[in-house]
Image 1: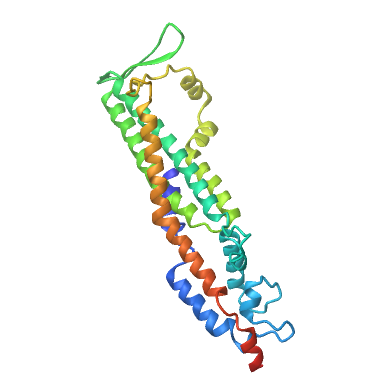
Image 2: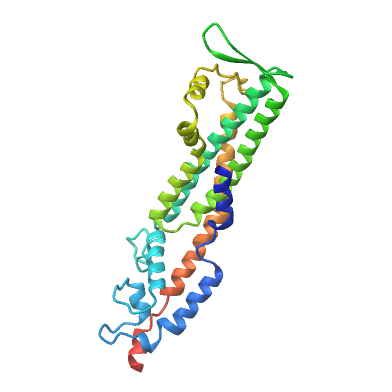
Length: 284
């Protein structure tokens, strides 16, 4: 199930919301439509560009551009207030996107650590040609030995889990970065967390009661403790933090910053410079 969602993310959910071609088309719209005499409002004395950039609900054309401008204002901050000294000038979009990416990266790394712990526990089990499962003195189900075939199958499952997690990590981060509507960004972050836990949900819903009881009563597999320094510092936790931080910084500088610049160019293409009310009024 997670693999199908990963393929779906790779196939079409990580398209960039604004490309350089889109910016060129917005510039064409600004020159040929937004400043056209045909759409000049004599009653308001405003060009179509001015009405779109002022979020006028009474415009008769360019609804797509008006919706995009409202979304960009929500993500980047109000375009016309940035020049004011008492205005902070930064919208919440960049912060919310990076917060969602950070939480997503932490969630995926937790799942990856669980897979690595499982691999370490499997490695510590004695192997034989036939598995041996017994009931110990504490009434716990204990795996005394694991067969070579089951060991290979379990390792393969965990490796596939790690690969799918890596795909979800990268493309899920892009999915969040390329979501420019704040409300949808929060919903998408929740949806990705659901995708990550879907295997546990399916097991809890459809696994037979006896199997769940057997797993619940099973003795936990032992995992060797991670290497620690003399001060008791957990090397694995430090390594996980550094890798998470490095990944978040890579996503920020290679994906979010360039996308934010494209959004700013798109906003400027629609509403920057002279909105031409006076020149159009003189032609009317």
